[in-house]
Length: 294
Picture (cartoon, rainbow, N blue to C red):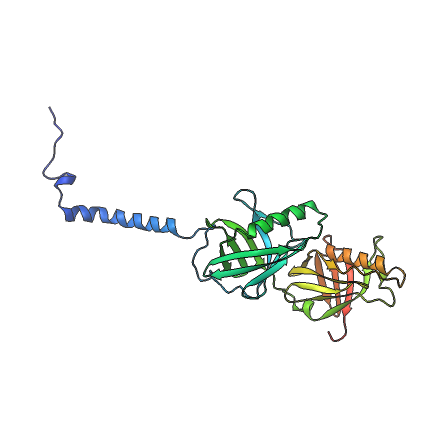
């Protein structure tokens, strides 16, 4: 009858020397160590500690492209009105939530960041989608604990390392847009006709390198935030003073038409000395000429 037993030519585990056993298991231990190291490296949703982490944020401007939804998924946000973020100095930041302007304090330490004392204007947002997104955005900012800059992208993470907010750099790719103040020459009417600016009035716009746009709407002064990419343009909620001008006739209607068209802008072109703003369908809205000294 055959019996199971040990053969002297094939010693059991317990009969091998410690040195021989170590030589046999060492390759497996090395493979395991490599696998474990791979498991602990920073993944897509982790802050990481690479050279782009802990970057100096002062003076940088960004446009939001995605944010975490009610769960853990990142959801893209519409291009307009833009949600913007600007680090104005080493301790204060601000921007547009898509409707209201906001400001806050912040402090960084390596890859860590805390955003506190957030406050915003209280303007009514007619678009409920913009309003709810803005409210969610302000709430998420308070949960940010880590950040990472990677080229032209900025990402914010929560205490657990999960993605919260993702931005792209808002620097203009067309310095021509920022060359000075543009004076409105004519504008499209609701019927498709083009009308000149009323005699005795001036409407203008200045696009700053910091992502701000401001000027005169003919009677009142206005300001807002903008972002560009190639020839795409989006302008956030515009706030204006509340003065009423008696003349010339039609000045207040002209002002409202201009501010409405400005908010609809989705693209631009500069040819020679003319700046034209277009809507999302490629239809021209506003025609500008360089102002004095531009």
